Image 1 (cartoon, one colour):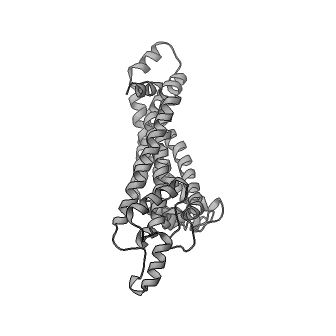
Image 2 (spheres, rainbow, N blue to C red; image 1 turned 120 degrees about the horizontal axis):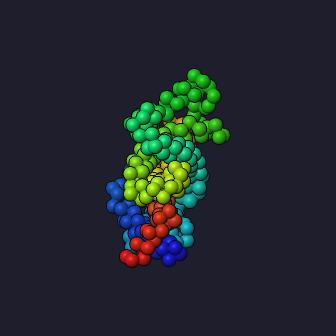
Image 3 (cartoon, rainbow, N blue to C red; image 1 turned 135 degrees about the vertical axis):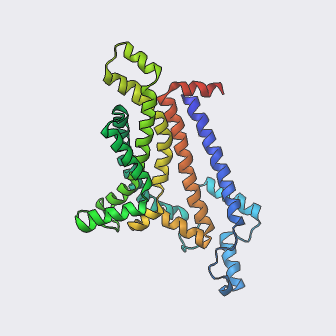
Length: 309
């Protein structure tokens, strides 16, 4: 297991290096520059700005400096937000996005697995059809529509939760439920399909013929094997949610990373764009790494197959 994990870790580091390099050169190919009103900037001011941020160096020199700073954990200074480090901006905004993301994942995973398992065990019943309808609605309804409905019901009519703004746990409930609806729908549908495949498999029939009770068969054999496809999507889904959702953050006035990320693209804030992109990429790649490790823990046959490659 250790060799399998180390191999996946090396792949993760190599992939992140490639992404960092591609991101750097793509940013240099973007039209325009970090100057919002270049016609109003004197040559002296522009030269001082370029010298401060190293924009007057040749591209290869900028790339080498970028990699050196990256290895030291330095993502540079933001062009738009004066005297603010990119790492400080990420550190200030990521916890807010991560909080509602984790709450959404916990809520969505618990109810998604529960609904999916029950629907599979009650296939063709009213419960099964109800879960399918709920899952379809969860995927089809846009987050801004669901968010507005939750605001109106729980914030305006019932007055039990804040409509928007940020400050306490109560402010995280509605945005978390809005994000979690998609998680519930996705996992419920996937778990139901996976459970139905496992329940009709030969090894489960063998377990029944050996006299194992229904609870043991479902818990030890059916659910465990059905979880593999869910683990595949859950890790990447988690990383996508904790890095922020622009629409949900805007609706509920959450001071997260999503708003910063869009603003940096509009203003050509190279350092902040590259910093947030690399942060997103690192989390995504790390989620894949965790998925591979989880595969090895859930199904040892995957580790064996990995050694044969």
